[in-house]
Length: 292
Image 1 (tube, one colour):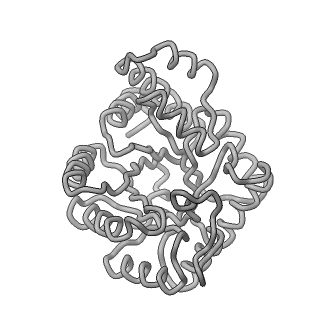
Image 2 (cartoon, rainbow, N blue to C red; image 1 turned 90 degrees about the vertical axis):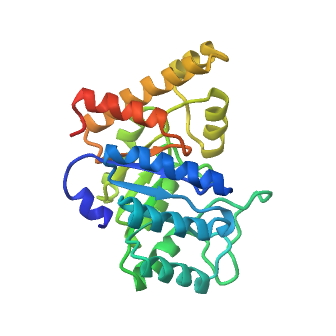
């Protein structure tokens, strides 16, 4: 089923993002994690795509396995990095042949060791070009990325919003945001998009915090900010990992509840291939009555 059809049901869309592990043991553990989340009835699972297509085969394998064998709807991430048009067409044909209906189309980060993005020969420089390419020949439902606090490479917020509009104008069906922690940031982001004429559903990306130093690194890399009060609580918890996780779960649950009550069409959980924090947040949302 296409994610646009799921969104049309007008109930909160809940999705979980995973990345392909490097080892066979990691793959088995990830499968167990996904299976453990199945009782939550997620709307879809998304599988990321390594830099330069480094996890191409595993991404296709996992997306196919999740949809065919586990019985959950799935979306494959696809990036411009390291691929020519011919290579991208082959990947799209393979995914289509395997019954995959949903994609998250991204430019992608520069490969490790590089500071600037450089398109592959006969490849694409921007995600909007990839979206237009997919839309021209394939019937996929296409998600695109949005950055409520601006992409780290964008000159300013206005430029970044224009880039997002280019992606939706090219054929993006829905938006999934980068992680953020302040609900007001999401509200302002959606309002500005609507003012520009972007009417696509904007699914809020949320990452329950489980490690203080880790989330500091992540936010520095992606340009997100941690609210001062939340950061103070995390720092005060110090090396007490249990307390850090409790703070992260509490904040994520409150954030998600506020988002859904404010009209967000859904939540996309960045799981880091773990299930405990996500399951606990889900349980609290169910108890609060914001999930069916």
